[in-house]
Image (cartoon, rainbow, N blue to C red; front, side, top):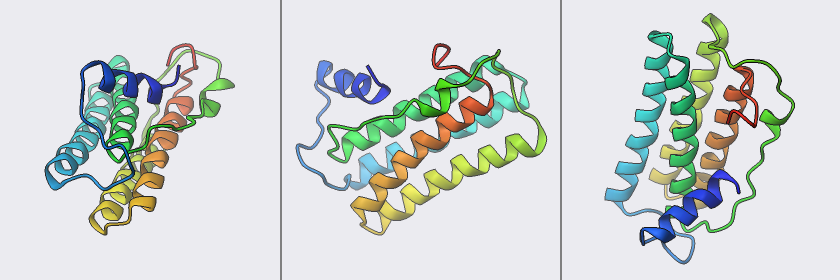
Length: 152
């Protein structure tokens, strides 16, 4: 199963109402989901500040799950999620330092910012594309931290 199918199954199990068709989120849902994404990104940053590898990994997983859930709240019911960034990685996960970490943080923040901009602009197609980028960039970050698919 992919992260996306796990989230969709969770929503079904707990009868979380999601739209049957593609649509923008209502303001309350959008506000909650976008704040949730930023909260997980800040948790990632806090983990780095505290040298906490486990919390950093947890926050990356949470970012992907929140992005997947947000896709589902936009009415996306199928999403082919790639594991490509994590498949060819070997080694023990580690925190990156300095410029490498900052670049990844900014890249993840930029993708979340893009989702917010596109949703605010009413552009559903580009909002979906931006959430897909959040997932991809987050997994790229995990790969650069030498996180394998098995660890993920």
